[in-house]
Image (cartoon, rainbow, N blue to C red; front, top):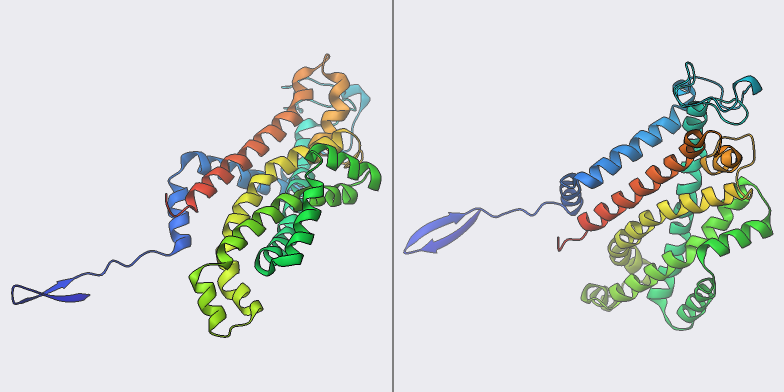
Length: 296
């Protein structure tokens, strides 16, 4: 309570307590219906991937040539069967595991590495900044798709090599964002005051810099998940990612491409899942960016 004098009388006015930053973020994003719908879809996909063995009605790798390319709505095969007679519903459910893993893991690894490089370059500056950022600029000479394909082709096909390739692709943009926001925060008054008080560089970065730069870097990184999923599916489609018979949406598109004229609906199902997942991550990232902007 605040106490003041008004016409000789004591007036008591309540002090308005500002809500916490993250509580405000949750409140603002909960009022965004598009972001909440996207979040529900993402959570449903994650739960589907976690509980795939309990949700899938059949073995995703066991097929029968007698049941190949069954149409959608076939008894016992609600989403049809693929070119080898494997249940499409089961393969789509299990495919969410590898597809989400290949979409999130490279961005998470690039977020850790790129944030560290960008913060070091932005805070220390000088020759270290020049060395890191000029090296990062080299990767910007190549389109992300071409770079991912080239790295995967050089390293060889496989899940691990695909993850390494995608991580390398996403490190440069995250590093550039981290360096930009760190450079802005480095010259703020509270950082100068901490430096003048004798605080060490590590302490200043840990206490004053990280808390102000990680939020915009994280928001930007979430926007890359949809791109990562599309690139990962593209690598699997080209045979540079997951290998058969593992169920993965991009690989399923590749194996079903010859059936597009025979059963186009079944052949399009993996692409529909990739589209829904990618657009959900993209819409949630947009809502998160708006909610974390205090000016909103």
